Length: 246
Image 1 (cartoon, rainbow, N blue to C red):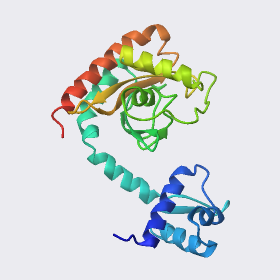
Image 2: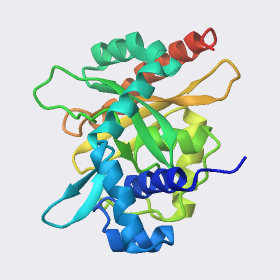
Image 3: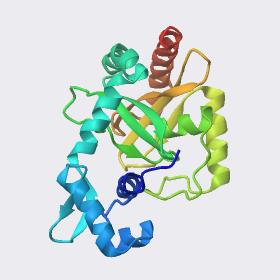
Image 4: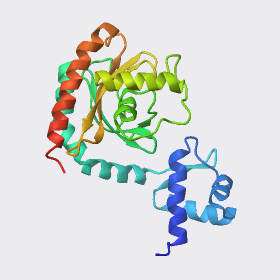
């Protein structure tokens, strides 16, 4: 079936905007789409009119609009894993005292689809809908270790602790598979430690990852085995629940 060209280009613009952290200009859009600037301007202006894109008047660059966030939330709400995990996230937060997070792979990154915040004054939150790197987050390492996602081609450094050598990362992922949990030891954010475990669906395939994040001052290294045990048990319980969720 032949595609509608203008619609296809509009969807491509949304994809381009989703990857452009600093936004994108009409000139850049035209080059990426292979069209003239006038056509690119009309296409992106239509998206702006309907709330799917927005223009920064100072830089004259375009970004994703609020309507995309609204659609994303609607999708997240319908995810079976998200619904099944709600009571387990709450239990995990209550057991550990730290923020509990749920994530799935998306576009070569880890997408946070739900969380339960800790009541502690000093805590580590991640907004639902946030996408972070796979190689330096505990939730992302779980996806690399137990899922079918390939290692990123570029291992960007975020802190002095980030694993940027592919060989070292593979060793870390092998350790993750052996012990059943992943650790982010200040690899993405200084002063933050995270633990995560896999969640499997009824087919035994990776459905996502669940874990906790907290300040390194509270999640001290000597506490990690104890905390990991709690996260592992919650992860197993959620995986058993997912057997009945299709």
